[in-house]
Amino acid sequence: MPASTVIVVFGSWIVIAVLTLLYYRVWSHRHDWDDPEDPR
Amino acid sequence: MTGQWSLLLGFVLYLGLMLVIGIITVRYMRSLDDFVLGGRRLGPWVAAISERASGESAWFLLGLPGATYALGFQEFWSVIGIASGILASWTLVAVGLRNATGRLGALTIPDFLAGRFPGDGRTIRALSTLIILVFYTTYVGAQFVGAGKILNATFGMHEAWGMALGAVVVLAYTMLGGFLAVAWTDLFQGLLMAVVAVILPILAFVKLGGPGGFDTLLAAQGPDFLTLNAGKTGSAFFFGVMVGGLSWGLGYFGQPHLLTRYMAIRKVRDLRVGTLIAMGWVLAAYWGAAFIGVLGVGILGPGLEDPEQVMPLLARALVPPWIAGMLISGAVAAMMSTADSQLLVATSSLTEDIYVKLIRRGRPAESPGRLVFLGRLAVILITVVAFVLAYLDRDLIFDMVSYAWSGLGSSFGPVILLTLWWKRMTRGALLGGLVTGLVSTILWKHVPGLDAILDIKAASFILSMTVALSLGWLGVGDRVLPRPR
Image (cartoon, rainbow over all chains, first blue to last red; front, side):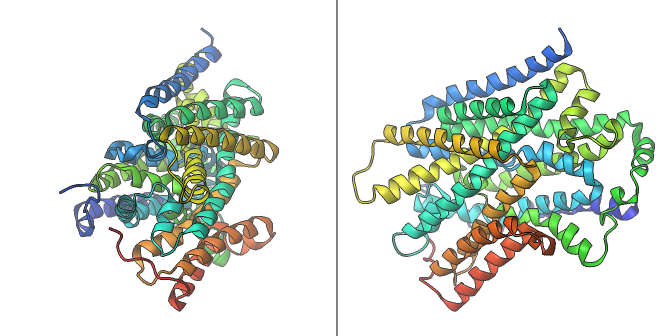
């Protein structure tokens, strides 16, 4: 199998996994987490 | 017990379980809010897996493996586009939409859009509902076609009877249990789909003899099967193969049956964990589903009459019949979990947006029980229309889904993103974006040659976004209201 195919198919998996973790650990803290139905 | 009966037993058990969930959830349904949004009571696991199960239709275990079986690794551009689109939708749309719809008390996407701009929102509701009905009848119909193909490949049942059986089961539990039945059956179905997409390629890989056997068999398919450009270069590769595949991801911003999962989550904060769960599902299942088709070439040989039957045929070739029955139920699960969610969105628009907000405007509220009854009638009506349209015009699942996906994604996606993120968004830009998405998708499907210039999904999204941005920039119509309270 061509190296370019292997790099794109499996590399994209790794990139998306890293972006997901970055969102969860870092970027998601920028969101407005106010709960409109929460009486507090 | 013969193999065929073992297959059938696994399948019937699965269908029975779906109906039981439908019956159990009936008791939790007292109002239209419960019927269309489950009273916003979903936890992060149910919301995230339900969003994934609804997002991946018969396309996921039939259309995509069929495409990788027929075309090879070039279809991985679709996988990459889809995974990126899902991540972008959870991170850019979910929180803003859940917050805004919670504050507005909006139950549907037309409800949300109408509530964010000054005025009574009648035109916005009517146009949005029209778009939903036009594309969801095709989309639901594609799921029934999927049921026909699976039952034909598995039990030799005539495709039309398979379509009818799938339609009746989905109709029954959606009508009974509404959103909660759909979300809870989705949880089970989503997990089953992931198991199939992970287990089946692993079994096939082992059967082929690991990396060595895999390479030998794939090399026999020729170089175009193994490369990501399929032998094309320049603009033919860039626009035809790469953009065409990646553009699936653009559709995720505008699929009402997925966006309602964000809206139904109990606490806004749960969306953070929900993102992790949904993306975990994507990373486990999506690459696996694509490999089913590639590995299917090695096990079944090339030249299947219908490539979209590669998954059920591969399951039958690799595992004992009763396990194959359960794995094939995964494909039926993919079909049902999408069809039920879509039926519910179309139903919600008819009852909440057309009947409650447009027809009964200003008059005393209907009793909750009567509205649920009308919701159930609408489910029957839309199922029948979708079934008849699909029966009369049976196309490849891939093409039917591509059309409906493009129509919904390009009509709603750009305007939802802009309404959430752009303070200069206007009512004129919203209507312009909706109309452009609808018209361009229909044009791209019916005018020969347009799809060769640019893929339908990319073209209609770009056109709709361009029109909405231009009208917003020019200030056509009232501006989007400040943050809803």
